[in-house]
Image 1 (cartoon, rainbow, N blue to C red):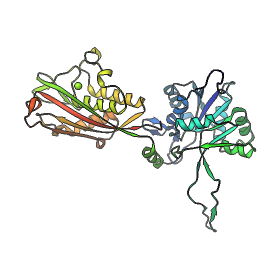
Image 2: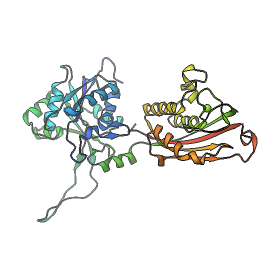
Image 3: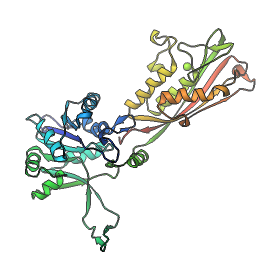
Image 4: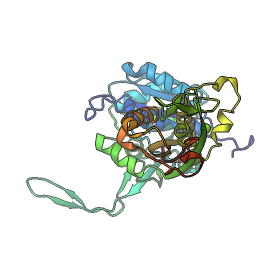
Length: 382
Ligand code: MG
């Protein structure tokens, strides 16, 4: 943590996302991944870092309003700037928008949504006019040519990523010198600047094709499993709502909300996996705001709370214990309701049912119970 006396120079992050994204058919920066555009994830570690004072998102005109909304959601002082036809033009546009006090600039690709806080810290901790994250090359390198291929010596060869940190004045003068340049680090080297490399990360992938997003889904972050349980009494004259579907029944569930035990069990499973308090904390029984509440709406809120904690639901498995009526005829409607609330496909949700074989109070038709298991994945590197 920087103290007042050792405060780092004022630092801005330029998130550059004005490219055309030819292989996506649209600007990559605004391709959606885990519920947010790539540029949101790319900018988030900078927004969360105390060492970064402001954000500038450089985007295409068509994405301007969406980028302003991203800056709002990130909750850091920031602005949105129109990019140019080339990467250099975009960087220069971003530089022009910086307040005079900014001394250091982190330039980051909007198409690298999985940059970790640790990588950002390594870059920020390094000294020097130009700091570049880089990873080793382990594969053999060939220059493939029809006229005779050649082996490239990989000794000392690294792959350079972003964020690249440069002194502001240096970055400005480099781009003024070569307005066609594609890469900030390459400009520094061409100008004879001694650049400093810090360890990059393989996971800090530059998304180039739709397949890259599938790869990121596999590598980005961890998996957690949560479980939940709920039970409600059944009485005549009440509605019976299970997994958001009302079932015709001579008895319904007693509760403050719509008493959807399956939804309640699932909410607790999600909250548990996200390391959050239980549903009684968020929706206290007796709170008039939740009288007769639609539990599917509450489930959608829980999904948002988990997401704000950095976790996305990727699967749910429910078991309902009910003597009568039968759940089977409603199963597909239930899967549709639950998966809709979770933002998943029906195939990612399972609804199973069993009876108590006449045993105990649930077997006598006096109650309904439900168990749920939810699988959550981290939304980005944590
Ligand atoms: Mg309940």
